[in-house]
Image (tube, rainbow, N blue to C red; front, side):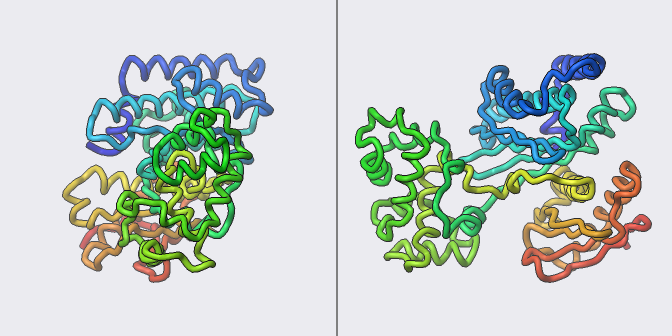
Length: 399
């Protein structure tokens, strides 16, 4: 089943709920001209309150320029049970409706909405990017449902542990990186590190529920600088994948002995993240890219990449032929879009990517006149080698 069909059939295309949601949003649009229901000053708090009240979801909303973010953490997105996944996708759909509803009824100048749903245990992230004008065009029936879905950016990625380590390794923890509620639960485990952290904070398990951010940050940073922290950890339970990077290999090797002084925090961050994935989930900022403002060029670039990935995911035979390679957005400067690949590709399959990239670029450029790239560069998975340059001036066909 195509990725779009899989997602939307579970939480957006369920006919009864879908049409109720559509007509509700149309009503909001019709009456939103009088007074903003959600003023800019409280738009993020309103979203957080609504998703908690209506869907029992804890999340963090942030408005950066004209880009509105909503980050939610949902366990169960990775599950062999279809019902579990379906239930989680319904929650994601609910969160998506909330952020759309608030955006349509706010006086904030919002152009883009980005919902990031994360599965903290596996560090998996689903990112949905929408342009608010596309939502309005669909609700006013200026574009079809199929056209609207083709304008959604859907990105699924699994960040390696090394991403967060490289970004944050040498630095102490900040208060905004510690999830207090998760810490109160995860510290109740009987592992030696949790026992140590409790001793450094409240001293007893019974007092864990009263811990605040400052106490937790102080304790985690004290442990972060312990060169012998590795002695308290069951190394087999960490389950590091040594094939992910040279740095991670070095970290694993050093777990057999004390890390070098310069690497103490890097090694300990890796260890602590494995033990407390929910408490420290915010330390891995790659998925949200620090909630920065995006522009039209980035949106179009990400949409091109997203649509090509949809094609490969929807056709299992093509996916196997291409080695399950996924494209990823790198940058869109001047008139050149730069794209990377998840892993190496052979010369025999590059023509497939050239056709897909060219056709999707032309298709999307017609939807957003004047914003399409004049040149697209596909980089290797090392971000150094150039695999090919595509000029989407005319359709490319397989030879």
